[in-house]
Image 1 (cartoon, rainbow, N blue to C red):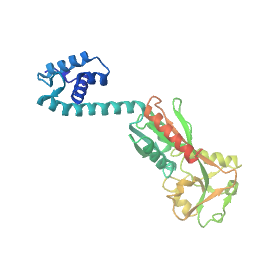
Image 2: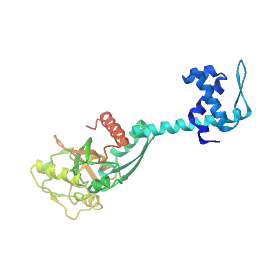
Image 3: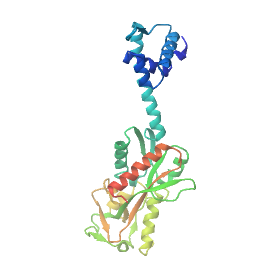
Image 4: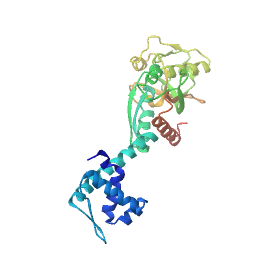
Length: 301
């Protein structure tokens, strides 16, 4: 038996004839000549070395071998069709695995909602997500350890692509015991003389630059706690040591002794971007489209 005996084309023709029990009707279904149907069935029988069909003047009947092949052929064709659809879905970017990196500031609302939306929009896309340090995103994308990142806006080397996905309000985070904690809104300049607890720039360049930029726009250079680390910011704020600007969703994991006070108009926002380097991966484009849909629906922009 030759491998060509089980060509999908021949199996499809055989299944059509077996289901229709008629060469002419099978030919119509397949949109080929009846003579071609007969030739393909004969070729399949020669390759397998068996008789698959009994032909009479009125109808076609399956032999025992034909009945066995029909069962297997249906499974093979179904599997081939599924594989073909899966491959095409991957080529369109509608299936596959995407590796997503995100920063702490996006972890509490932006990324969970993004994952849920992509899951609804493209159920065959699997996203492997992990929190990373913002300062490492460029290297992580360049080294192909991740496909896409969500992080506060910052600068990247040439060759990177970005798209704004959210602008989230910033407010002042400070100790519940602070004299400003009961205010509904405060001017940023009100805390010009306070120590600012900010995650170091090498950890969170986008957030760091945003905070410093708004402070300068308000007319002062922030006094930054040089001892602040990723582990000490919340603790220092809870103890009444300094203040910071933070996006509202990040208050979810904050200690209860830290409160969030809105900024007086015009306020301030933290801009989140989707960042990627490989612009040829269709999967990235589909996820970016889904994120853009979410941003519009949620009023993030």
